[in-house]
Length: 81
Image 1: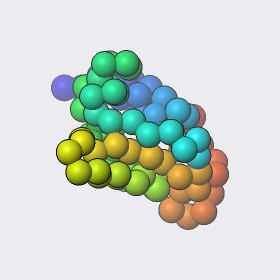
Image 2: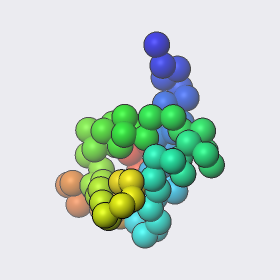
Image 3: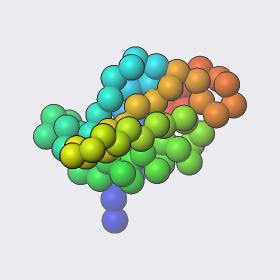
Image 4: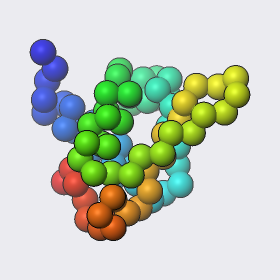
């Protein structure tokens, strides 16, 4: 079973690092630089929490993710504080 406090910490980090900054992150970058092993699972959790996560797919590369500054309801408030 996953360590839930660690997962919450990863979600909070991803929200802070990506939300509204224009930065993107791939699963390989997340694992190599930040130790996030299951980026697709974290993205699913971020989307379930109401964040607007965009998946960017370019030919010949892996998917990268970006989070807009506003969530699905239009709020800019932090979800994972």
